[in-house]
Every structure is written in structure tokens, then in C-alpha cells.
Length: 314
Image (cartoon, rainbow, N blue to C red; front, top):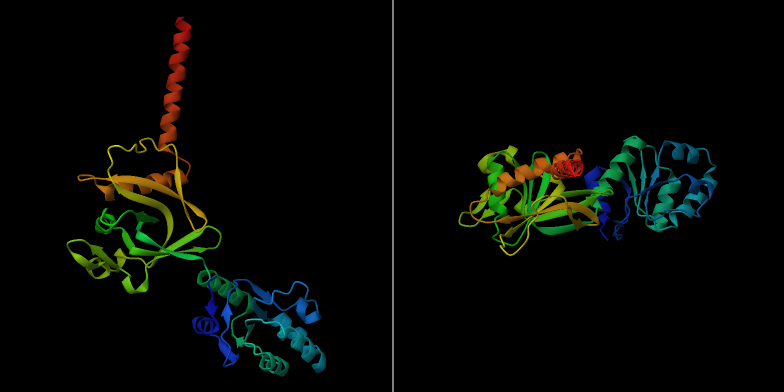
């Protein structure tokens, strides 16, 4: 299970620390939030205490309207649960009872000056990204005509050379050799390069190339959504390759099915040009037009037409 530390959360979101136990190593593992509403009136049956707790304007004014001893008792009950952190929005004043309970039970109290709705949206997006399931795949990721193409295949098959040719044609490199992929939300796969090797490309015989320095900032991109996987393999004369494109093949990446093409490679084949056409063709399919299906319809129509003419002659 992926997690993000309280220290990183504080740094990345610029939060003010009101109270943070020195000896507590807090890790956030949930991307959901909980606004302390029902718990303030004593309902704890479905309390999501493993989530970050939010105190916004409404919760704060409710607490402000309670008697001091009642407020202290209810906050003490809430802070008994192992909550990762309480974040107070709008730069609202922190009640003494919150500080007392936080020190008593070793809880993190943070604050932001952002409005509650804007901050919760920002926090959810941040946690979705930080806690997204992630894997690293061997391959090359490029952006071609606005689509993310993940090139896979055995070492030496020509993935990096193909990426270099695509960059020369005006497309962009995202990652070479190692592609870090994370699933954001339900069905979005985001690929990027490890920071150490970002924008570097290895070409056998030339060595390591810095694509940003060679071709400019417009030739690289930090991340890209993965729309298509293209597997490159050495041409096998004994293997039957798809010649029509009627049957789609998919690969499973982090539980999401991604369209996959297998392209055989041999001397004389312009793989970069084929990838450009494959990208355009995939885009056409997404908009409802499939050339293979259209040709199949025409052939069936012609067959039926000839069949009817034959029956009339008989």
C-alpha cells in the first residue's frame, strides 16, 4: 500500500503546523477526506477516522457555539481515534481544547488559509496522485499527435531509435528505458520518467543523448497519459500477423485494459512512420470510424449484390 508522510504533505501543500508530535511517524494511506460534522454531535458509527479530518467554517462555528466543557468533551472523544491529521481551513483560530486533545493523544494539527472547498479539492487531487497504484515497465513513452504511445519489446529491437526518429519528426519524448506508470482515478494511466534519467535517451553506437539539449524543450514532456501500447518484435516469417485490424488486442496495466498493437520490425521498415499512422488510425477509431470494419461492410455488400444477381439469372 502506497503512503505519503505528514512531513511531505506539509511541505507540498504549504500547511502551517499547529501541533506535530516529535516522536510520531504519521503516514497517510487514504485519499478520502472526512469533515467533522456528525462526530461533533456524537455519532461515531461510521466514523472514517483513518482519513484526514477537515474543520471548515461550518464545523468551526458549531464548535464555537458549544459550552467550553461540552466542546472539550466532544473533541477529546474524537481525538481518541487514531486520526492521521486534522486540518483547519480559512486560517480560523484554533480552540484551546483542540490543542489539549492533540497533545494528549499525539495528533497532528495543521492549518491553511484556503477556503474549505478549494482546499479539499486540491487535497483530494494531491492524494489521488501521491497514493495512486504504480509500477515501472521497461519501454519507451512518447507523445505522438497528442496521444501517449508506450513502446515495448526486447532490448535492441529499436525502441529508442524509433523514439529518436519520432522526436526528429516533431513529436515528444517522455521516458526511455524505464517508464513509471501510475493509475490516477478509475481509468487514467499516467506515465513519466524517473527523475534521474528524465529526457535522456540511449542509442546503441551513440551512447546517452540529452534530448532536451539537442532538440529543445519542445521535444520533451514530463508526463503523458498512456493511450496505446505498441509492442515491437523481430520479424518472424513463421508467424501470422494481423493484416486487417478487425480484432483488437488489449494489455492489462494496473487493472486497466489498454489497446495493444504488435508491429514486426525488419530492415527497411519505417517504424516511426507506421507509428504515426497507427496513432491517427487509433484516433479515428475513438471517434467511431474503423477502416477495417468499413472495408468489411463493403465486401459483404458486394458479395450480397453478386449473390442476388446470380439468383436472378437462375
